[in-house]
Image (cartoon, rainbow, N blue to C red):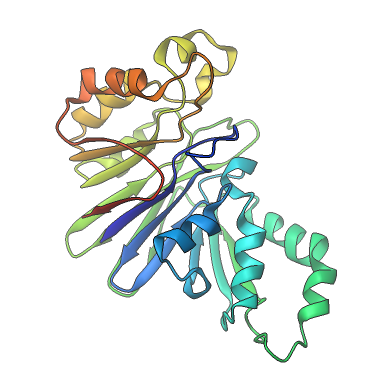
Length: 270
């Protein structure tokens, strides 16, 4: 397996750190997890043929995690995708897709539907809200296990994913607090890709701090659960928020070996 971290940033505009998105490659298949700002361009830079991607997974539906999705979907069709796209995510995923492709872009799609160069099925999709406490999707030589985590749970549902193939495992989490379900999902994994959004002090003192995991807490639980390599992402770089001091907080609990400070287009073989 291979991890490609397409975007290591968060909401704010940052020309070095684009929006949340990552590819997990299993054999010849590329699985896309989240599709934030610039994800399609980053796939192009990484040499990932995005029109061939069959399965997309969303952690949650904050716009920084899904705003590039209509561009990815429609341009993949223009580039001759010839099968329905499979889309998996938490509650609201089906509604999100209907709103885009049956409302917002309905006229656009209809204007292209009979174009001789575009395929008939490339503008079709199958979306699924994952409502079960735990659900596993089987693929060609791999599985994707999904559990619910917590991030603004009074408004949004949220998922984390564990991809397993040939005895190896990559866990992709979105924005979340620590929960037993997430820790169990990540236990003993080869790679955990996890947010490192704000410094511990800011998270502990801010009103919205209960929606994110602090760097120190992340390092502590990842070490306790036997995570082998920890990739940090979703940096909200701004005045008073710098990447290296947050990484140092994680390192103080997790240790230096196995800690990877994410950057756009990072590739990691697993």
